[in-house]
Image (cartoon, rainbow over all chains, first blue to last red):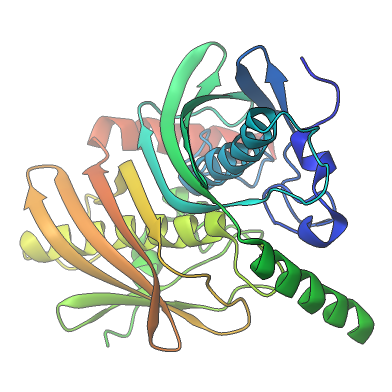
Length: 168
Length: 168
């Protein structure tokens, strides 16, 4: 498995996402890595991430699939361009669509494993298939269509982020 | 608009969901109501529900669509059976699949409005189409395929919930 998480190479200004931003103290702060051709992320739900008693919340599962998917998309695009992950200009992906099939109730008290696989890279679009497993059983299967955020939008967001910081 | 939220009629034992459980103090505690033939839910994202600066997190949007969808499914099924919402035995729906198309970045600093519409009720399955809007513009469009949880599963979950409480 690679050593540095995809999310740890996102620029600071783009690292406040509730799902994957390392600078969001309230968030999930997921970490994704390459494991051969697949990307992997392990996450232990917190006790309050309940759906029905004993099971993990479907919205959490969707969130994990979403952020692991966009992180995998960025990492794959860097690889495709033969660039080091995190090198400038940053490649940051947003979600165009998310689909999740909930195949079985997901236990809340174990570490969940997400595995991503690239289905397609075409221009600015990357499609990632993701499975979410608990103790070796696949509980959910998802697909993320991720789109590379345009550089001028990233620049605008960075400027907004600086303004917000200046206000603090 | 109806006065009592769908989620406020869920039985206590099934009211710990992170998205919609009124007994989950860490959760989103969404509230959904009928507004004519549509269901409506309004939610103000918290500042930490960030995606990129200034915008709401896609996983939050998926979570809102999910729980508003399953709540609408339950309410629609009660209506279909000409029963009062919340009357015993409880009708509780779980998500079989969730699809979200993110049409435009969703601002984080306004109240978001979700509107649900029943596409299909067939046996134990209810399909709900949901839009999520900010200031009158649709930012995301979703579909929830919800399935009525079997009564014996609900009974088992209630028993588990009582055991957890006994441990407290």
